[in-house]
Image (cartoon, rainbow, N blue to C red; front, side, top):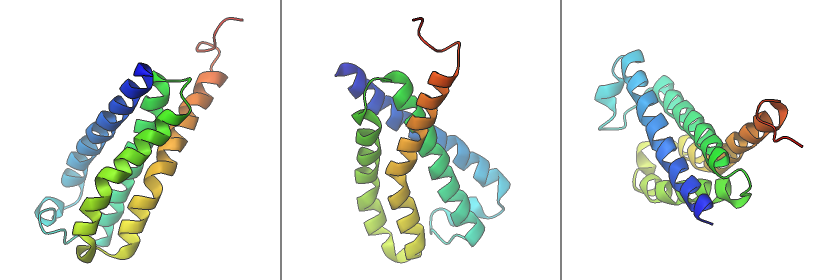
Length: 135
């Protein structure tokens, strides 16, 4: 149980770390992005960049969760739904500032992308002969 709890917490921290680091990259790559952040007046490229950041962060966080609790099936589900619960009120607040497709893409993909990251990590672990447990 403690391993599952720790993996969920680590997954949420990993999501925040990956998203923050990639967001700094987006600031450097897209002119005007940093100025658009406070007002949420993003161009299409900026919106797609933000969604891509969220996707990479979710996949990475799911992999972290699976790495730390490989035997816990519910851990990536719990982490994904916790993140969704954290972002839902924020998206309700900013609903009128961004198009519906943006909100729905972000919110509806969090949990599936966590699960994808967890399954990719599990698949890598079982297909990698170095990572397999000795019989």
